[in-house]
Length: 334
Image: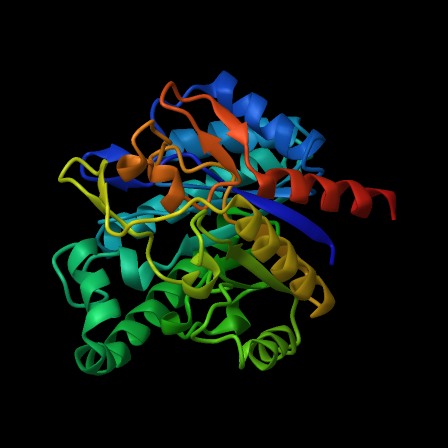
């Protein structure tokens, strides 16, 4: 495996806010140094829906000595807005690459789910309800959604290549059904192994890796409650208000950091043994899901971050952080 990587969120846009508030470049700089120097990661996938933040974090990641996977992750744009965002990002990523940084550009993330008019639904909440609660209607909608994704990428990729001259990929979900002949690297955000797919996971991974191009697992991880590994691919058990902020946990949860650490480390090792090119843990921090003194509102239980975000915005390592630091240190020595 060439890359042991970490996801770093600069702010997913929802409800008029983002999942990374406030965004402070000096804090980002320190986080990225930790990812490189304490977790011993080779690369970081920089995600988010605000272009200036993506560019700032990508530059800071390169300064920290990390390979940068520059990854727009937008929500609520229409097709034209998404195209403009992806092409602008390609130009910014190329400027960074020309400074000598190692950069991979991802031409979007999970766009069928997060872009308007690819799947039925006026917003993300309605599309998520379709995905999780209406399998019949989802099956009916998949053909048109997949055609929309393929059409968008067929138009976008040649324009991206005019602007960015390094390797490109796309952070996919299985429902996207991507034409990978367009790309240099195959990449999947659906790297979660849980009770629904554990039996077939080795075969699924082998098929993904065996397509004749490098394969990157761009997202995998687990929440921090007991039993989270059994439902690792499900949405976080938390409800959000109209402002995009966490409101309440949807179940009574018990903290189990050791289980999160075991899950992430076991899956990381299996991905490495399975021949992936790159594996990116999700995620460094879920700043929109801070811990609190109230167990019923301890939103970190529903977070996949390997650090625990405190109410003042600072963080402390979880057990998964320490396990990954040991893994990265041992890997660096080998």
